[in-house]
Length: 191
Length: 292
Image (cartoon, rainbow over all chains, first blue to last red; front, side, top):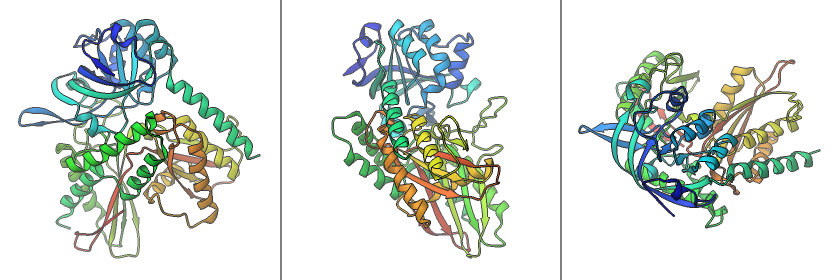
C-alpha cells in the first residue's frame, strides 16, 4: 500500500496491522532528546501537524558541501513511550516510524487521535538510506548533536509494516502474549 | 608498527560494513525457515538485501555503529599504549569518513564529542599470551541490543529460577522473552554464568567473540547452547518481533567460578547485525591474516 504526503488522518485510519506500506513525502527524525524536549514544552522548529516522526539517529556526512545520508535505520521506539502519547495529542502527528513497537499509552493515543506505528526493519540502514532522496535540512543540531537532531528527509517508497493501527490493534501485544504462553509451556515441561 | 593506524581503520571499515561469514550463513538458514508472504520472511529478505548493499557501498550496515570494543591478545613486550593511541586515531578518522556514527555522548552534559573519543570510548580489553603474534578483534555493538542485556541474581523469585542448570535455562529464555523484537532479532546471546557483577557481564560479552558455528568444548554447555537456541526459537517471537520461527541464531555460554553467596547469570544480547571482525598482527605490525 502507498502512504503519500500529505499524511492526513483520513489516509492513516484505513491502515491495519500487518499492512506493508511504502511511504513517500517529507518525514522528520526525532529520538530521545527531541522527545524529552517536546515533552518539556520545547517549541518544535518545524510544523509537526500531520507529520511522520522517524525514530532514527542517522549517519549523515557532508560531501562537497552537501549532506549525504550514509546510514539511516530505525532506533528502538519503546524509550519514547513516556512521551509519545502526549506528542501525538499535542501536535496531531499521524505516523511514527521506528522498531520494536510501543506500549498501551501510545496505542490508545493512536486510536483516539488517528495515528499509526510503522515498523521499519531494524539494522537495515542501507536499504532505508536508499529511500532518502534528499536531506532538506537539519534542526537542533548544535543542541543535541547529529544523531539526536531533527533531520528533514524527503523519502520515496520507504518500506514499513503497520504493527500498531488506529483501531486498538497491536502486533507487539499479540506476540508478547503468545510468547509468554510458550515460555510457560517450556519451563513447566522441565519439571 | 608503522601501518597500524591504517590497518585499524580497515578493521573498523570492514567491521561496520561486512558481517562475518558465520553470521551471514545463520541468517541465510533463517530465510529458508520462514514461509514466503509472511512479515517474518519479509524482514529477513530486507536483511539479506541490506547485507549485500552495505558491503558493496562500503557503508555502515546499521546506523548505530555502537560501542567500539577492542579485544586484543598480545605477546610480552607489546606496546599497549602505542596500540591504544593508534586505535583512537583510527576511530576518529573512521568517524570523519562515515564508517562510524558520532556516538560518544557526555553522560552529564549530553554533549556529543563528535569523534567517538571520550571516557570509555573506545573500550580496550588486553590479555597477554605466549604466541608472538597479536590477535586483534573488534565488536561494534549497537545500543538497541545492549539495552536488552540483563543480569539475574539467583535465586530469582519472579521467574522461579534456582541455583542450578534449570535456573540458568529460565534466565536465558526469560531474557529472550523480555527482549521481544526490541533488540533487533533474530538475536545472539552471550551468557556468563558466575563471576561477580562486572566479570560476569564481561564474560558474557567475550562469548560473542566465538563463531556461531563453533562448539563449546564442555559437553554440558554445548548441549545447553543447542537446547537454548531450539527453545528460544519455540517462543515464536520471530525476526523483529513480527512472529515467526527465527528468534535466536545462537547462544554462547561461558562459566566462571562464583562466591558461595553469589550466583549471577549475565546475558549480553546481540542483534542480527552482529558486527565482529579481527586480524592477526605480525611482529612488524602488518596484517598476517583475517579472522572469521
